[in-house]
Amino acid sequence: MGHDHDHAHAAAGLNRRRLLIAFALTAGILVVEVVGAILTGSLALLVDAAHMLTDVLGLGLALTAGHLVRRPATGRYTWGFERAEIISAVTQAAILLGVGVFALIEGVRRLGEPAEIPGGALLFFGVVGLAANLASMLVLRGGQHDNLNMKAAFLEVLNDALGSVAVIASAVVLLTLGWPWVDTVAGLIIAALILPRSLRILRQAIRVLMEAAPEGIEAGELREHLEEVPRVLAVHDLHVSRLSSTTAVLTAHVVVEEAAFTDGGAIEILERLRTCASEHFEVCFDHATFQLEPPGEREAEGELHA
Image 1 (cartoon, rainbow, N blue to C red):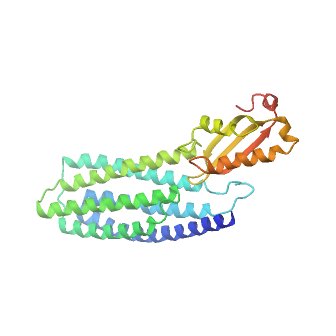
Image 2 (cartoon, rainbow, N blue to C red):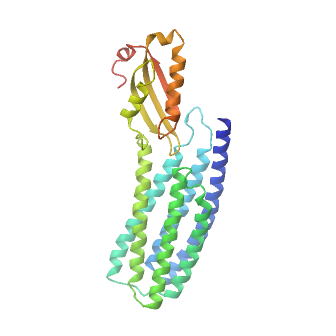
């Protein structure tokens, strides 16, 4: 257990360094793209710059959340600050969603009034943006599967890279074919890339905030499996949820044979239940709490538990 804790602590520290490097790269390129959007009047570059701004805010939130998650539990915050990761992911997704909606509205408005965009300058800013995005992706790639916070940060930078590709493509078309509306189309494509990913992250984060059962777990099947443990008579008041994208929680009241409390069987039952929780399901429950009860105890609890 100590080894796992040390490994998790080291991974959190590494992810924080990754986020810090990505934050510095993204903040630098944001300044470049804002200047480029002002000089060229490009919608694609403006949307990409706005998206980059959300990345700077999002990576800042991710850094803050990564710091809070490492803080130990306290008497007031008994679970620590793991939920900060989810709050950060929700905020990032909401910002991305807002940018995507803005880009769609502005893009539709500009379709009827295409602006004259200098292709050469647009190409330069697109290439610079893509280079920085690729560097950030390489930095964040190693931690993207560690938690939802890191996944959201990686997806934001990936979306920026795709946005920069769209900017470069529109610049090439402008330089070769001279189509003025291509920049607006590129802006709409960037918006189309932003919206589904932001909705996906938002949905996953809200599931955690609403304490929904982890994906792949159905409470009824879980109850049946626990009731198969020898000497277990029934399971009730069963709750399964996620504290964060990496921490699953299970609590249950377990009715066992009354003799188990006098012949030492209760300890064995508890160990079997813990083994089930940690090994037998698609999700490993890091925190599993079982309250063993004799027959008739549920009736004594009245309507307090369901």
